Structures are given as C-alpha cells and as structure tokens.
Length: 303
Length: 282
Image 1 (tube, chains in turn orange, blue):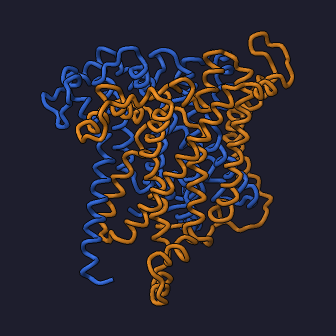
Image 2 (tube, chains in turn green, cyan):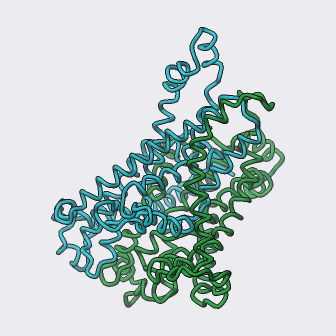
Image 3 (cartoon, one colour):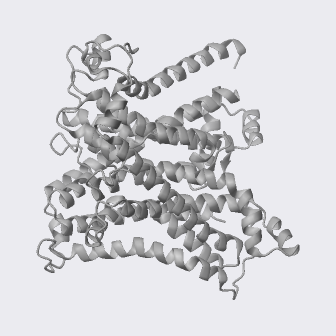
C-alpha cells in the first residue's frame, strides 16, 4: 500500500528501435479513438463559429456573447462556490479522519471495516445519491426535518430545496457524502507509506503527534493531496447528475452549475453554437487540471 | 502518553467513528427502507425508522408496470458491451506498448493522451456528439452509448492493464519463446491466464463506471429503446407527482449493482481511480 516508488524493473530497454510491429499494432485502435475524440472536438469548434439555426457563419459572435451573458456568469459563480466548498470540506474532513484512524485504529479488521464502509457511498451512482438526497431534504416527508424537529433543534420545518443557500448546502452535502471517502482512503494510504523508521526516529527525537504530522507525514502526503485536489476539482467542476435530480439547477439559478447551464443552452434553448463556444471555455479549464496532473504523474508514476 | 489517559481517548475515538458510520450509512439505509414500504407508510407522520409492513411491491411495480426491466436490460447490454470492447481495445494498445520495443517518448505520450480523456468534461463531448449522432441516424440508439462508454472506459482500462502487465515479468514469456513458442502462443497460453484476475477486475470497474453514467444517456436517448436505468431513476424524480417508494426502489437497484460489484473488486477501486498513484492492499 502507498505511493508507488520511482524505480521499477521495467522490461523495456530504452532505446529507439527500427521495429515497426508495435507501432503498427497500436495504430488501428489509436486511430479509431482519435476519430471518436478529436473529431467531435473539431466539430465543436465548427459549431461554435456558426449560428446553429441558420447555419450561417458568425465568426466569434458566440464567444463575445458570453461576456454579456449574466446567466453564464451566475453559473460560473455558483460553480466556483461549489468547487471551493466541496474541495475545502472534503480535504479537511478526509485528511483529519485519515490522521485520526491512522493514529488510533491498529487492528486490521477494523481498518478493513472502515474501508468497506467508505467504499459504499463512493460507488453509488450520482443519480441514486440524488434520490437519497431527495428522500432526506424533501418538504414535509423529508427525514432530516423530522429528525431535527424531534430533537428540538428547529421549531418549524426548513424548506431545504426552496432557498438558494440551503439548496446549495443540500447539493454540496451529496458531494461531500460521496467523495470524502476518496480523500480519506488516499490520505490513509499516504500515512501508511511513511517509513516506520522515519516516524520512530522522529518520536525518539522528541517529536510529538503534531510535529510528526506537520514536519514528516505532510511531506509524504503532499503529492497525494495534489492528486486528490486535481481529481476532485475535475469532477466538481463538471458536476451535473445529482444536481439535476435534486434541484434541477434551482431555485432560480442558484444551483445551476456550468454543466447544467450548458445543458440548458444546448438542449432546451437548442442553441448548440453558443453552447459549443461556452464548452470550449470549460475544456480549457479542464485542460489546466490535466496539465498539472500529467506533470505530477509523469514524474512520479509512469516509469 | 500514559496508559491510563490513552483508553478514554481511544474509547472517544471509537465512539466518534461509530457515530460517523451511522451518519454515513443512514442515508443509504433510508433509501432501502423507503423502497420496501407501502406508500401509505411513507406518508405516515412521523415516519418509522424501522420499517413495518415490509413489501416488495414497489420493486415489482416499477419493474413490471412501469416497464423498467427494459431499461435494466439496456443498461446491462450497454455496460457489458462497452466494458468488453474497452477491455479488448485496451489490450490491443497496452500489450504492444509495454511488451515490445517502442520509444519511451511514444509510450509516455500515448498513455498520457489516453489519461487526458479522464479530464475531458462530458458536456464538451456531448454537444458535438449530439449533432453528429443525429445526423448519423444513431440518436436514441444503444450503439452510440456503447461507443462513448468504451472511449471513456479506456483511461481506466489501459492504465489498470499497464499496471498489471508491468507486474508480470517478461521472463515468463521469454522462457516460452526459448522453448519454441510463438509470441501469439505465449500471449494466449501464458500471459492471458496469468492476467485473468486483472482482466476481470478491469472489466468490473469499467462496467460499474459505465453503469453510473448519466449525462450521455440523458442527452443521447429518448425512448425505452435505448434508455438506461439511471435515466429511469431521473424520470421518476423529476415527474410532477413522485411515487416515493418506487423512486427509492429503482434507486436501490441502480446503486446495488455497482456496490456489489465493487465490494468484490474493492482492492482495485482506489488504484483505478488514481491511475496507479495509490495502491491498496485491503
């Protein structure tokens, strides 16, 4: 368990060869893949330069239009809030839980149990997670209000999905429920990758729990935290499924994140040209996340 | 730290973790419990936490009366098709690149490019794909979903296989070559059997990922001819009058499949999701 080391006995001698066989073998599947991926992206560029209804070439009109679109900026803002809050809470919770379990739970079966428990929300389809959230937050019959009223924490039921702020919280809670385990499991593996003698040497030198964490363990965790942040950023930035099921982007446009807004522009207003232009912006942001990760994975993982 | 102070602290942690576990599993429990309640029990106030009058009627009703068994079948076809196809394509790509001589730059570039697909936002792909698929007459056709799911399973399938292949020493095949076996014989008779558990794990993970996919299916399908189960789930949630126990029943089925599969392949989940950066032994 733990981060994979730099050295691995690779079977491949590292020199260029004149043998074409491997290149010929990978050519057909790679070509097909390229057609399936690259062609739509070029097609998208074509869509973005046209008026979809008339097919007329409009130059950069669809791009400049975005700057005067308050709904686009609203969705950008909502996405920003969502991404920041989800990443912050998930990393904080996941990391502290991992530290807690790493320090206190020693028995193997207890660790396996925790692992098993945490896998469940992570692999629940987002749509099903949305259903669960519906059952919890819905007015009158939602179980959260019932529990809160019973405990006397609130006097009147809260209409979770009708207020902008509470709807955002509800949507966020699903993400946090599903993905804090991911942060936890990665960090937990990271803690276990800290060589035992390093940790022991530190405690012999008088380093307490916190010093051990800040000075030693965190340096082992740093690359993994970067990895977690990049993956969580990628997925929260594109969030769609459970939001559609839970709030549908509402109330108003308070939870209409980028993917939902693009969906509306493309498939409700049927303005594929404008949606394509906006999607190129989404693509650029996503590419930045990949650039960060590929530098990291390129250095640490791929041999 | 003295032993005396240690125990209460540990008890506190265990209690905290236990509470957290309950908090964590309760939402899931609530969906399952709602799925086996008669609708009248759902509207009872206050609701009972432990179900009474359990019934499987919501499941039957949703599968038979609403015809969701067709969506279930679509999901199975699409996910099995794409996972199988994805695995085949992944082997075709990974074997030559890791077992034969290629330049290091080519190998790294190819794996990185395939990894980049993991970062391609689905909304960016689905907008042009919608138009292409409509013009090609593949709108509302399971085939377009199979193709897309295959593409998006490849980052996981290739990177998982790459990790597994690098763990099997090439000497095993080389020994067979020395004994006069052809490359093909060594591949099919020596390497593939060794790789079988790994192939199964890859299949399970890509199947489960495809199973959960929502956006492509939501946009590229229109009728039960090609709609998958998540679309059925969403249709029950967004309709005007929600039949709560039926909604929970479909949600439970949709969730049960990947959960059961991935509990079975749990050793590989984190490794697959982090593309080999983190490896699990649990």
